[in-house]
Length: 526
Image (cartoon, rainbow, N blue to C red; front, side, top):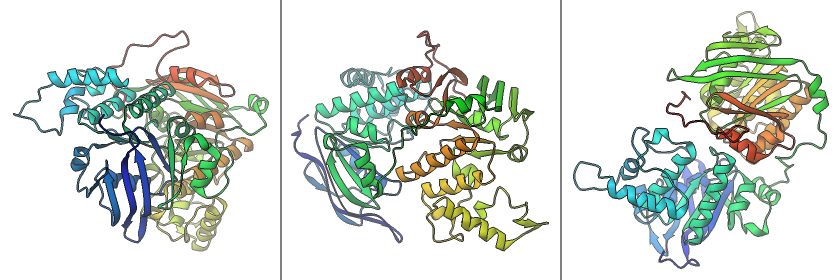
């Protein structure tokens, strides 16, 4: 590398960016240097993605200046950014699955002739992989690779194109703990070799482990830039939200496992099977029970049957075999309405696609569960006064920040949308809660509120099936953790004292005897 590791790689001064009346960035100064990992943190809507999209050439700032490697620039496209050595690895990968690794790396690059000549690229990728701990078979079709391997391809593609500044957006969200630890080692190695790494993450422990410096954004402005070695999780969280937060990853002092043991089974799954969207097996014989007053977590890398499990239980997907019992009654292949009337609350994976209506106001979204029932309805008519009182109470009790019940839902932050969704689902005191990634895409303050809600439901005696890719969340909230791999339960372990490394091995498909199954050749739908 030709860069002086002490020199600034990125200098963003006075950056401003507005979308209509909303100021996404306001007078932002951000400086990151070659030879360091610089973390960027903040609540959802704090302006992180907008700022990095300006750096990656996707947006143009309304105000301020940008310099890369000491050179003032005005970026007009991502192609210009990569030409200057800036590349971004997005949370959702941009790969063509039927193509090989080498073919994906070549896509978008200028070449002579109509054919992709991959021989030289394959050699170069092997060399880069060995040098930076990113080994992957250049000839392998992308669809045969694990999620962690696909992420390596994204990084290799940028390195092959000469990127010296790498921006990674929530890079460990889809990785096992072992893969996340490997990525941290890779990023530290890249920094040691003179690269500049910008690391965007909600996981503050991870930020402190990988970063040299941390910049915190709040409401579009920088509120602090600190050395990671001189900070801690609580002080970063306080900067992010502007107030003191309770710990998000520690159990309350009391451990009510004895009470859990006496609860009756509320959800019972026996040999449950279901197909994915592509018609291939997604659930391959799930046996699982959740008792009253118990939270059972479901861990696994994305795409191993979690979504299909939740949808089959809640009536959104047909079971192809096995049984679902709720409160002792057969609920296999019942309609979503019947499942809801059986006392089941559902917090879906995609709140806007399956849980809420973005174009409807908050009052309309608040009553979607019960708009046909008294006191909200009288015969076929909705009682406006009762709806208003119900919606106002829901917004107040769950701390939904909004001008009022007539506000359009789509204008709210992700955290406020999620709090409204949980409040609506929990209003009827359900006996079973199926929560899928309840804090995905929400900020640390909303996460604290959602965790408190779920703990309160557990103390009330509700049974909760909590599906999450965040092991810290599962360890904080669950009594037991079931690990899914390719639609099968690899193991069920008590959350108290659980070893994250063992959980990570189970998530990777390695059983208790250290045996890994043959790599899959077909991916289940979803």
